[in-house]
Image 1: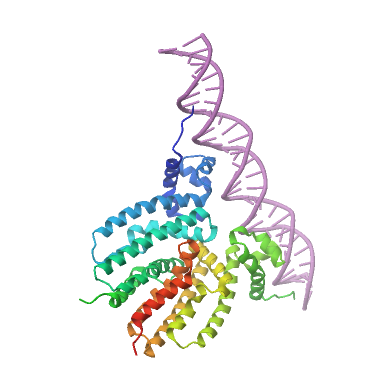
Image 2: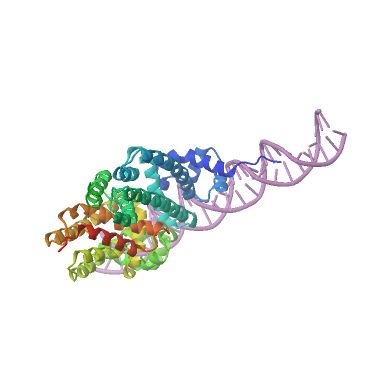
Length: 198
Length: 198
DNA sequence: TTTATTATGACTGACTGTCGGTCATTTATC
DNA sequence: GATAAATGACCGACAGTCAGTCATAATAAA
């Protein structure tokens, strides 16, 4: 009998070996043949593990997001101030270290908007839900600790979207040069209103 | 002398005759040949007026945005309350009547994120700047009229991005079912904090 | 225990159809 | 006949397929 490969693992291996290529060049400029060559497999093999080019990006994002979440969790556990936590939470949208992940994320959003593949939408939904619940929890904890007013919880979804909106606007236009600055202005201004005075 | 056609006008005519096709099918599913046939011109002619498929969408969006702006201006002139104005301003992201424009806008954002064409980025930047200044002006007027606190102006850019962020999230995920509801919650909550009590 | 047989998953790259984009030619007008 | 406009045949590139090869291990025969 033949060797049975771990399909899921090989999918990950191939995807990861293409990671750099996706970051340096855009999806649009890459061909399946190039990617296959990079991964060291035949073109046909690519189609045994991925539906198409977009699906490869999907896998890369999937892997990197899991890693990113673990890291963010650790990063947040060191902070106690709610305001600071929110800022840390949003730093994905501008921090130097997440630059390449952002590049991929940008492309993934673009794919999601056009291809409308069920599986990818589900992934995006799950991502959104997870991060949103996480973000909401930070606010709730701030409320419970008496740092911010109870009403703040109603900002959860919208405020969460603000980060995403600023990010999209910054990559699609030149109108927002400094996402970090804009986010900080917004959060600082908001906190002047929702912070409980001691 | 031969016929001299109004290049700019013909570009608009061709683009507009493709409008419906772009709304019903996505860009991805359409070929230049199809679009040329729809516009009643040869395939080569398309390339006399457009750089590529994306450029056609660009022209359609351009035309529709100008029309949309005029309409929005009229819509806003009837309203005096700042809160109401902001809500009207944002209704592009959920109103039934702008549905098809949103479909195109969504695709255009997707294109902008991937192709990074200089001209399109400039258009997006101009759009963003215009709408943002418009939005900012609404806030400033509210401040001048004593409806909302002066600090509110710092929310301009971020709040503007909130609308965009909720929209993107709603089309890329199933996590936001009702953009109108979410926006209203956000604006109402914010106004409880920034509204000047009489 | 060794060797031969065989079943099957893994893998491949030549091939095909499609489509974006070009250009030589034709058409229309003055 | 000069020039602008329009065209569709043509080309190259690429996504995706598929017929065929290979490697392995379970089993059978010696």
